[in-house]
Amino acid sequence: MQKFLKTLISVLIVTGLSASLSDAQAPPPPPPSLKADSGGNHTGASLDVDVGGLFMSGERHISHWEIDRAEAAAAEILSRRPDSPEGLYLMANVCFHKGRYKEAIELLEGPPQDFVDGRQLLSLITEIDETATDFVEYPSEHFVIRYVPGKDEVLLEDAAYALERAYREIGGDLGYLPPETEKIILEIYPTVDGFSSASTLTRDEIETSGTVAICHFNRLMIMSPRLMLRGYPWLNTLAHEYVHYVITKRTRNLTPIWFHEGLAKYEESRWRSGSGSELSPTQSHLLAQALEENYFITFEQMHPSMAKLKSAEDAALAFAEVLTAMRYIVDRGGYPALNKALDVIATGAAVEEAVEVALGMPFSDFERDWKSHLRTLELKKIPGLKVLHLKIKKEKAPGIFAGAEAGADAGAGAGAEKEESAAEIEAAGARKFTMLGDLLEEEGRPDAALFEYQKAQQLAGLGSPQILNKLARAYMQNHRDDAAQGVINDAIAYYPNYVSTYITQGELLAKHDELDAAIESFVSASRINPFNPVVHQQLAGLYARADDKANAQNSLKRLAMVLRNFPGHRVEEDRAGEKTAE
Image (tube, rainbow, N blue to C red):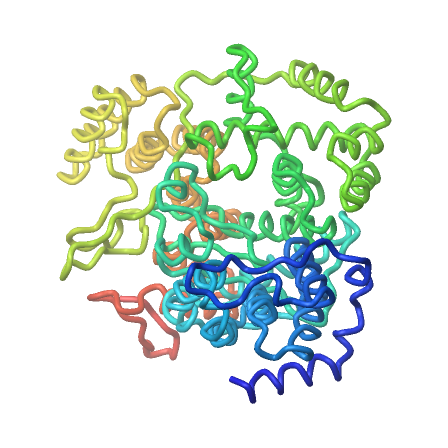
């Protein structure tokens, strides 16, 4: 340990990190200490004033995500007192925020263990390291993506592409490009429990709110889409979390949650679009309902996290509110107003003052005018529309293979949880007709199945994306492709994150040789659930038909990744040297 510390301190001091400590030079308040238990033999009184001030300064820098400055403070403490529990604790926290978990654990296993804070941090990092110890790294220009080898490798190329696009576009919008001296960490967690530990969210909070990603501890973290029954729009989610990273760095972690989430929601589409996010039909429906019932989530209720709201519906409404609030600011003052507000927040001023400065109006007027503005947006309630909950896949029983990864029934093995299960349909009558339609389809009676799905849809209206997708497929099987396309259009408009609809749309377009449009549909599916083998199999065939050999081969490579360890499937060379899936 002593040799490790001497090496670490000398490197930090030689590289000049101990120089940037100006805010620690003012006379500090009484020196702090870590919380000691009855058996602890270190107290705050044992610290000299300078070391106490350095420790407080380092803690402030950690809270403001100024990690290099915190590292300088920790190095200075340890150069004076190598065994200082405060210095060791602070340096461990720096290592933790830089993603160097094993170094953090080694530092905490010494004197900091005598204190409650030291033990708590050690417990947290040790729990995270149980997953992180299996991580390998995939670097891009500005990011390093950590993942556990296996099926999650299918995410890497697209994740790097989306993040690098977000780095440029969002950085330009918000006037902040992180320094290139250290790459931004993204961690892809392969289990719900691993993500829960790393994010500090409980499993109940994750399931209730539908939280699948977080920007925390100076890095981005997501759950693998593989863990969700239908995946989720994971590339937009990566961009969303990167916006949080930029806001936090740019404003020293002083931005309140409603402004954070509104700006992240507005900017999350910028990696693939020339403008900020528009309201979806579901968000329009929720806001229309909120206006009618006078039920809103207040900005204060959104604190400290959207993940802690009581339901997925409340979280969805809150996101719709803050998106419109941010669009209102942009409509009045554009990006200059947004950036002015961020500048003011970074000084430590309240968000109310920041909005007043940015818009030139009292915050109370902003709130009033924003809500009045909602009534001008032609918001529409849509009978039967449901908030589509993200659903974590059930744990498979020992010895049972869980089938195609969140696949659309195709190839699902015994014990698989089906994405298109009629059991999820809430209305009992619609569920009964849907189940009967499924039985008739399995018996090869598509005309009779269509009749049952039509009856189910009449009862459910727009309340079930499962029924809409089954109905569209039944129209296709009965050679009524125009009717199928109409249902597909409705399903995508009202449930844009329901992956099965894009697969159905792609198959319909491919049937009519609309190759580019079909490819676009399957690419959209892969941006929600890249673990469905049907997506990559279809893309490989479509790219081959379009004579795009490079993308055909890449799709086959991805197919092999998601079929890894999947019984009864393999990708092998055919006579022409091309890879084919069986």
